[in-house]
View 1: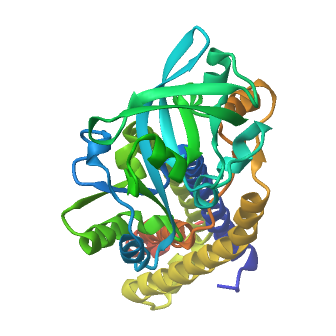
View 2 (view 1 turned 180 degrees about the vertical axis):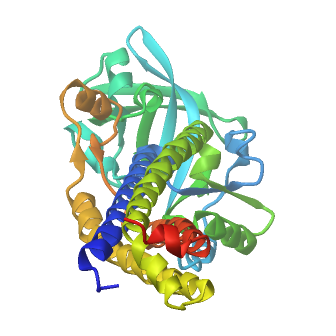
Length: 395
């Protein structure tokens, strides 16, 4: 390999840069999707939710269930679950003077909710809820429609548990802004105990919201939690709760495969072009080796071993070089500027393109480039098999 250092270095360099390019594009694509999911989950849904069986089809208070330490303990037995928070949700009418709007009232545990959806960071006016507050937190769009400010009074009217009448008036303690226009125009938060009192649903909740340590194990975790809780509960992932976002990611992933395919074609041409140049340069060498008695089989084996070591060395060096590059752009993501950044922020998305540091990206792309390199190394073997010593040694 090192008898002609320049030749070996050029071949390895083509594979080296192919691996870096392949890993970088794959990591960037996956990082963007992971960041999108993180932003969507932090809006409201969480990574997983636990409901009473049938609640997703008919979201009414009568499909609520009793908050239980035992149920929470069963959920937390799954090691991948990092946190659980209860909610009590239902639709009510919100009124002030002559204005009335339909909205979603959500009873929460303020501390646990903030750990999962970072609700406190969405406050733009006033202050965050406490568990013993007799107050509500309004979304910005709803506050504007009702013409309410911090410390104003809001009247709520709705139907409580088992058909009871729910009514009350509460102080607006704060206003929050959400990236989702749907949430921003209709959601109200209040402490869970206050919501249970309002709906006459003492000790009842409609869902548990779950956060995870490792989001890659989402589906296995959902299956394990569902098996632990039994048939009285349904366990839904964020993809079940927000199917349009899941479909968008799947569509973009499929489109990205075509882009990745074009990239692999470019890699093929790069490696093959280098191999072709090297074979033209080594034509005389092959002819001379066959002329002095080396069998073509041995010559083919020689080229095969040389190609394998060259491809593996270039691939390994490419992976090693891509690790700090990907890690840097994970810690210092590509930032979007101008009007596009403002649009992203208005919808609650971070205007950044981070890379993913998932080890599978490095391994998968490295293996693909190795396979491409090994397949293309068949060309030198083919030329060795067809070499004619007389014509090969002609200048």
